[in-house]
Image (cartoon, rainbow, N blue to C red; front, side, top):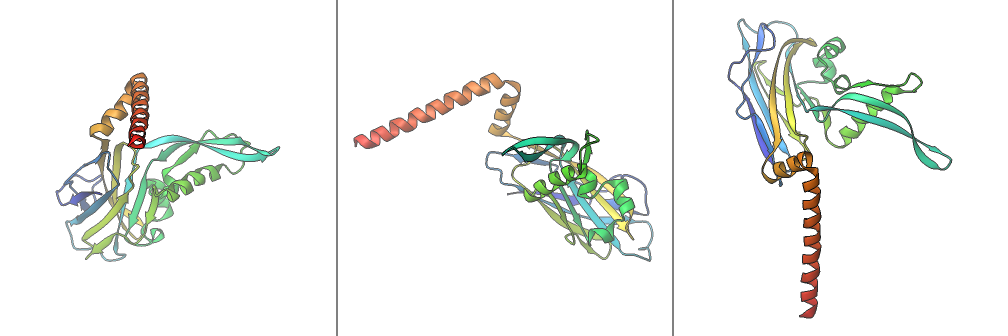
Length: 254
């Protein structure tokens, strides 16, 4: 298990000016995927910078999201016809993050209004988009919901309410577990400060997730030199089979 710590202590420029701002820095901005990689835990903690006393009114809430690279996904509907299962309708989900986790300091409905969710696309349902549906396709939204349901079951999508601890409306911390089968690319980490469901400040940064060592070599070869990769795989398979056969034959002769 690799533990990645995002330390929110170095003052950086936020996305927009506000009376309350996230103070953010990175102690490590890279996750290395090796042959024995079994997942990663991201620790995120930081503080809120203010030029004035804590405002009266609703308490400060914090939302932390980590979003993996997006790629198109074609979802097909299968139906049983004449005794066999066949593909019927299909929808192109052109914006489906490979990983999406949201952590909040309170129930999601309390920390963010529907209007703000629509504007900032924080919830899982707002993070994906379906296009390319035929006008005659019934229940087009069900295709996007199927992607969410499948990836939730795989541990790739999650909303973790009440998992961000906020102390004195100034310090906050949380942790997000990431599975072993991560997709390579830049992961976007977003931190939102909200009051009464309205976003008062936000900050964004990226985490680089890459394969290294032998994993990287094999991955690059499979993409850049598929013929040599196939030949090498064939030679390894033949050698392994021959070696196993020889070992069993020697054992029987003893």
